[in-house]
Length: 285
Length: 346
Image (cartoon, rainbow over all chains, first blue to last red):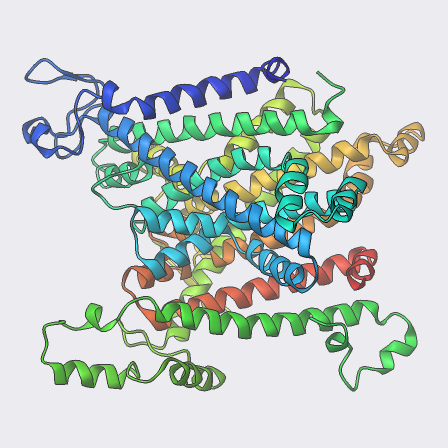
């Protein structure tokens, strides 16, 4: 399985990017030469330095500094951490909610199923940015509110996918056998239905993490996302935006490029997984 | 929606005798569903917006004397219970009044309608760019899927779908607006009236202003159209009718653009329509970056300023657009391929 995965060039590159950036995010406190949130470590004298400048005390600002003298390498590392944390947390919660909803709908059927799927259809008709934006408008901005907004925008995809897979499984003999054995409902759902219906979600999870990263970045860029005190990549881009006309591009471009590379990496992994699961493409190498 | 509720209303029953009522029936049912959806959304939006926090704090100094606060809240109807506020809202809604903006004092619906032409012309330009470039490229990559260019375009479209649109917008601003200085990056430029509506598409200066935002907005539909056309064409190339047409000696161009393209038309029309609705309702990001005075920017300003009536009006307006666009798409598809409506019947 793993060897098959690495047969694709794009998939390999994507996996390397994702692992490298995730490693950077986890190790940010070790790798960064300063803590970008600790105002005591910032030197206002070295603000807005272009990339590669050597500071007064001999430190090199490879990506330059922002308006408060913050080293952009450190800011980007911590921003990556925030972006990934928000995306992975939100997608995981959405996955759990979607799985519970989809599984229950498939198992119970009837009115519950109809109502839930109507809701899902209704929600999928609207772009996820709109749903997230409306929710952020209602709840206010901040880390947990952005996570709630992303969860609300995403759970429907998981619910629908799991439900359709579980509906197929439900008709099979082993479920009927479990039924005749009078296993409790939770046992059939969790131990029989779920393991056999969860496979299609693998690809979607990866793709949804990518879209969660993009969604959070968009919300933060619009100024309704995370708070300024713990900037994500999207917020760093937005902060640098005002310096663009002064051609101090590095403030926006550096986090922008990191965001782009991250999204490309995650999507390459998702695309490769999709290919591997697509029976039509299996004949061709 | 239950099936009995979907029966054609009185007065149209004569259609049933002709046997081809299916399409009409289908359309009527979709209209009824749309109306129900609008009612549901109006309640949902209203209740949700009610939780938005007290707009008074954003409007007048919270430190004002209590009697001033009480008077202001009475004037806005904020002292009534929730259901009474909703009924009041519906009453006004039925009179075409969606309330007045807390910030500018103008009617909310009027604000949205006055901003809508700007969004509409931007979206139309973007979809035009996306379709005109996307369909030929999609056909090309569908035919030559394994060529280097075909594979490159295939990967580029994945990239374009996955990067957020504000990123592309910023790149466009940097390259064309700041470095090359060839195109303006803010506002609508000079507008001129067409049929009584001010549009940028009528003047050269306006067109120059539309170019970058339209390009930005076109990125997503372009990628979607290319991928969709490519998949459709790829599937068709192996079909018997293409083999037959080639054996018959028809020119490749004719096969592709007459026979193949017709058979992939339904999914393309569907997606073009739906994406058009999405863009029309939701060009917030592009309008923010390029200071385009459309409905999207109005919405984000309203959200930032807790301008309740404008947010509700915008949401309802958006839902209406979605319903109308989806309905038009369904009707078009039902006309192109009548099987669709009979399938939906079951």
